[in-house]
Image (cartoon, rainbow, N blue to C red; front, top):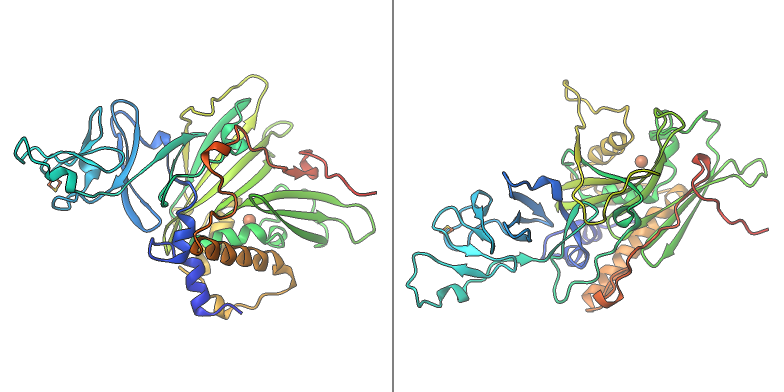
Length: 386
Ligand code: FES
Ligand SMILES: [Fe+2]
């Protein structure tokens, strides 16, 4: 059983909490690059409970700094950028991407006062159309170049969902919960004709998280059909689907980032990649972004869409699900494995070691291809032992 204390440890995201300390060791998706434009190069964001602004200066460099000016707390979201950084709209103090104060127009010319000012500033990297931020201590680890972000042989785009009013862990537990597919998504997830519920599940921990494998149609003694895709620890799902409305169906790989905004809010960004014989998208290109609204004009969930079916389940579990009241069953094995991994990695960071999947910059790989299989839609084949 999960105690209230355990639940707190696993779900809190602020810098003072052990869970927040773990999440800060990973590059987090602060915004899509297309959310910043020449007309609006500054955007207020909240990441891991911290109010920040992300900006692009006129030299093309990205920065992520605290929203509230350290002078007298006006919001830098209404500031302006130049070739060196961002300037506060109130009295013109200027900051670079590292959060260093580099100008205080009303102070004497020879004053060193600006050097005493401390302001949060975090490194930002652009990849696959997203802007990733590292908010942890020390040297940032390598930014993982996941296939969906770094592949160039096709079309890439981003879908941003409405802000979810729930804790990030509810979204991630769903990624190791394969038995929900049949019930929550059965009629809409392109499953074809649905027979009886007949599935076997495996959860295989690996260097980047947990590979989830669903084998359907096994009870008759056949070899069944395999669908496997990983949870990338701690807060990403790698998935693949096939469109049903496009002639012949197109394979769409995707990465679903569940950004912990604060303890009770999560921002989902889904990066899609569709391989193509004719289209190319650079790994460093800015790509288009669509919004996915969760509710209709009456305020009801639009339950004809898979992403919104999941969002309904997560939000209705409550702002922070009370796990001390749940009743897990055999079918929830993946959730138990994930929570164990989460607690172990929180402990690892407490001891001062790098958590799962974090490698130093020197070990950066140009492309991390994930072993995603979905035999039903013709993506990959599972190698069966004879
Ligand atoms: S409040 Fe920002 S410069 Fe004064
Ligand atoms: Fe789902």
